[in-house]
Image (tube, rainbow, N blue to C red):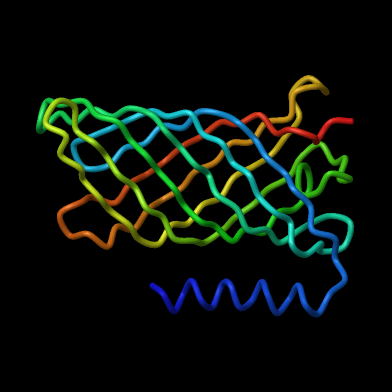
Length: 179
């Protein structure tokens, strides 16, 4: 896993050094739903990213996160808890929301990264921890010519054998896209 993260970091560092691209900050705020094994949860999500390399006028390579804080429920244990999710993602973005200057009405993105997720179970204060490779993909669009939104699906491939793989779905409002 460390080799994969080093490779991703090295690719971004090398690509950025070879271009004169302007680093650009983008972000969104929304909600996410998670499901895995016998549990499910919901969370508020903040997704900041840095566009490190512009791919012409229509795309960008970025490094960011989809930080989530929320609640969970396990039907097996009958317990509720607090979820903290912190993925580090390398993503490619095209069309709407790929850069601040892109005014297309539709766009898409996909990425690969490493995720760390912790679930603190209610009164027992037990902490379930998992980490692993995460893949994500989504679309970006403008609703009613005023509301810039993203729909995102993610999948965590857990490296913890006692913790399930996790599917995530999210809806976010993209800031700074509509001028």
